[in-house]
Amino acid sequence: MNTEYLTQEKFDQFKKELEFLKSVKRTEIAKSLEYAKSLGDLSENAEYHEARNSQAVVEDRINHLEAILKSASIVSGHNTDYVTVGSVVTVQKDVDKSKREYTLVGSEEANAAEGKISVRSPLGQAILDKKKGESFTFSTPAGSMTYKVIDIQ
Image (tube, rainbow, N blue to C red; front, side, top):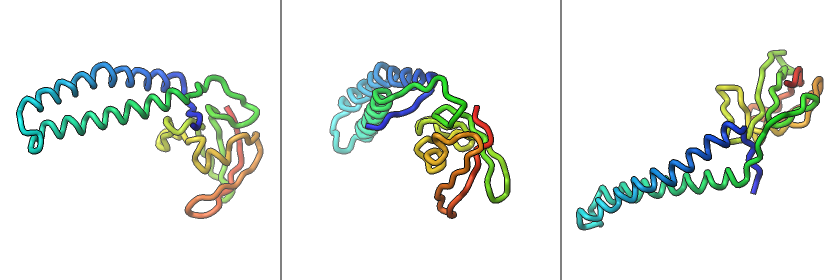
């Protein structure tokens, strides 16, 4: 099982969601199933099939969250000498000299719109353990890209 890197905030959020699903949602679905069963013929009972579907979705999410929390490694402090999970990194593209800032996070927290890239993404894997001033290349669908690490926070 792979380690899942999480901030303490995300870990707590997942834990809270898991407790809600186990205590509240499971109970709601159980009540829905009982009501649907009381309506009679299960083969043509839309309420029953919908409740069973909801139960499967909730149980799948519970299993997913339990697996994440079991393999979680909480990211707290990080080193500013080289890029680690949790680092805020400014990189410069070799071709057009444009600069971008990324935060290296676990895959569950990745969000490109917020500049949070997964440590398992091609860029995340390429930038990991690089030092300030170091250049690196990685493959993209558009071809190879070369960047230089400008700053690590």
